[in-house]
Amino acid sequence: MAEVASPESRTRDRQRKPQLYARADIPHFWRIENQSGKAVVYVYELDPATRSYALTGIHHDRLKLTIPFDLDIDLEAIDRI
Image 1 (cartoon, rainbow, N blue to C red):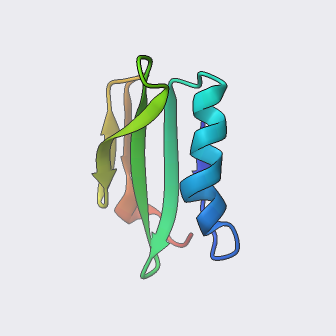
Image 2 (cartoon, rainbow, N blue to C red; image 1 turned 90 degrees about the horizontal axis):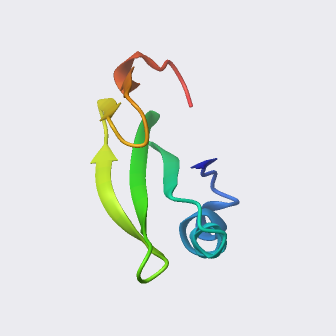
């Protein structure tokens, strides 16, 4: 699951939606935010014991993951978010 936060939805995207996704047992959650015109991706993984998300990384320049699948995105190459 991925959410793109906007100024109007920032509180919901940071607080309420992760709670709802955790209750639905969605194993991975990414939140994408605009920081000074650049994409920043916050990556979370669900802890099945607590049913809450743990932050596994904050990606500024490159989003490179192997879980839940192999992914490599140059965030610097994104023109505008």
